[in-house]
Amino acid sequence: MIQRRKFIKQAAFGAAAATVAAIGLPRILTREKKERLGVALVGLGYYSTDLLAPALQLTQNCYLAGIVTGSPEKAERWKKKYDIPDKNIYNYDNFDRIADNPDIDVVYVVLPPFLHKEYTVRAANAGKHVWCEKPMAMTAAECEAMIQACAANKVKLAIGYRMQHEPNTQEIIGYGRNKTFGKIKLISVAAGYFDPRTGHWKQDRSKGGGAMFDMGVYSLNAARYVTGEEPVAVLAQEKTTRPEIYTKADETTIFQLEFPSGALANCATSLGMNVNYLYVTAEQGFYKLEPFQSYSGIQGESGKGKLNLKIPNQQAKQMDDDALAIMNNSPLIVPGEEGWRDIKVVEAIHLSATEGRRVAIS
Image (cartoon, rainbow, N blue to C red; front, top):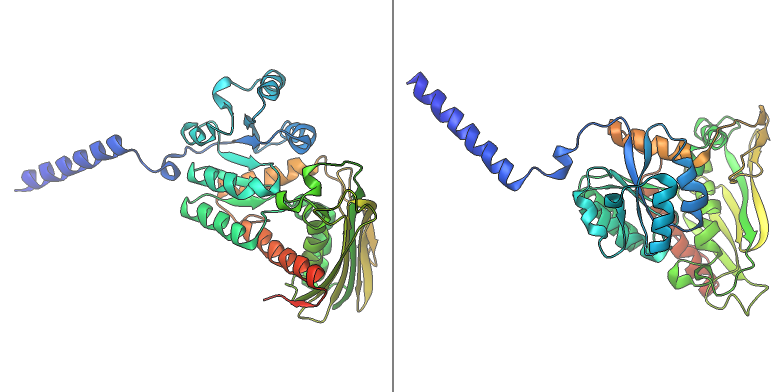
């Protein structure tokens, strides 16, 4: 009788193994443990070309494994420069085949914002973790769809807010959490640059252009991470000095955020002027970063002294942090929910500027 039970048990196990072999395990269950994650960059514009690809040569936890581009010329240049095998080079038509490529663990979406949702969802459905550049998407509803797709496919979604990985920024986030200088009263923050281009997608809000989408999320995100709170209301205005260029998007947006604690944030963003500062006034002192977002480094000061912590490369730090979180299955510093919270506020800012009134944020 014992032998018969043993035979039945072995037969059942064999049948189950045969079934698994036939249909295949879910990708999430068959991923091998890796020391470094392979990253595919989707979109080979300035940010990928000049910043992300060089940063991936400095990372410890991930590396440049593949690319996705609609340009055969770019594909050939990148193939030669970074020794990328043909099987790891995709275009936008065959992108979904990335599901069958074990070399690629992460898809980094570096496209204009109106394409973020589509390629995040497609990457998640392919079983790949997703890093998505800011702004996360065009609407809060798109953000929710991206979060849901990643959750359904059991992959992680990180948003490319590199500043939250930066040590000086992390230091002032700690000041707010620990009430180092007491209760925060007022924040002044601005992010912008002069963009001389015309006819670019950044002058078209329907593609994710305009100051608020492009640079305004830096100011907004800073006000949120400094307070550790979500704004409850906003009053905003849009301005332009070049109405012949900014017919479809905002050149400059000024907005004031109200927080539950009573803190106020006076924020500005622009594609018409160079501004780059974050100044926090608290009950028992102040602290500031100027510049507070810059590829070349962050510095500032507080009542505790100078803030000038150095790291070799901001993008490399961001990607290494996110890769380590994936490998350890630990929380991301900037998950998809963080990008969604910003876009909820961006929608309220656009509404306030359009209707000329204070808008409550639920």
